[in-house]
Length: 436
Image (cartoon, rainbow, N blue to C red):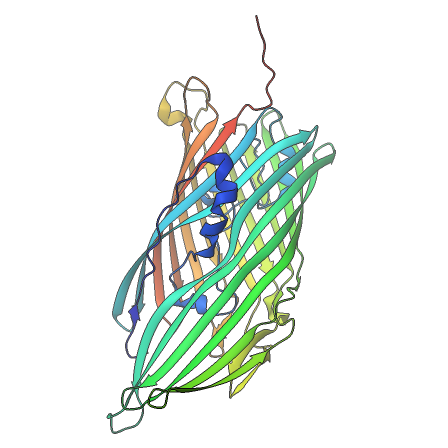
């Protein structure tokens, strides 16, 4: 591109009240959580997974369990929810992104509501979790211009824009069938609109060409997981976990509209092409391991694979809109992280804070002009700050700062600094009152 200009969507923070936000926040997910031009490819930019507990460790979670935190990254972890409490976890984020292409730099700011989660213990060794989370985000607008011929007299301007994404509403159950083993499943409803457009005009011409790519998704999602715990000594615990996400057709009919207009005669010719059941999500696998020393510290690592390589995706090229098999590639994600709490019951406030850190590497799941898209390198530091008052000493304000670098040879480089803020309410809804 010879010239880039970004138009940034203004998004405001949402006011959240725990019981009502789960319903009211549905409308907030209609807005995208990204301003990246890379979100124009495939299903868009994949959203950050997990709640505020996970985000402080860069999305670590497959082998983590904590009865005082919600961990949607492995449904087996729900079996460890504390029997006396009702958990609510909700979060929002704000970010600043710097785009760099051949020395041309632009900055973008964006903020969005992220997720809401709830969890409680239904019966002995059975926990239930529900939530509303983003899956992918589309949100970009930029313009490029070029010369039509060597005479440099005719300038062609192309405007690219898109919005939407996929969102998931889910209900999950975790069970401990035998000692030290937990299994679980998430059952979700996926919905969202994917909208992208390209408008090409010539300065010296009355004609313009519009290309619109549209899809409306309403489908399901199934995830299953397991965790096995092995005590080591009196205080230490080794945990291994695994997760599988079912890949399937989404039942959506993506549509391409090509509209050619002439402003002088006010005439438009439209060509419409629809692909029946043309969108699909891949099978995905994940495994993790963690080591925990009492309530003081833990470390862990996750590896995940999304098998996009065998998945076809619709594309318009050469005057034809059809499914293509060479647009996507397998995506691999590697994450390490840990948490330190010097002494949870200390009188020293700083000893009660949970200090978190994490790092990750992710390969792209889409291709751009035949080459792999940008790979992602990320790092996070976070803090779990206990909220202490006369009624509650188990809730947390979770704050994390994340740095993300997206880059590939010959493509736009993105550097993002993101702040995630989450509140975990740990309320004793199920405690028995005692009258003396």
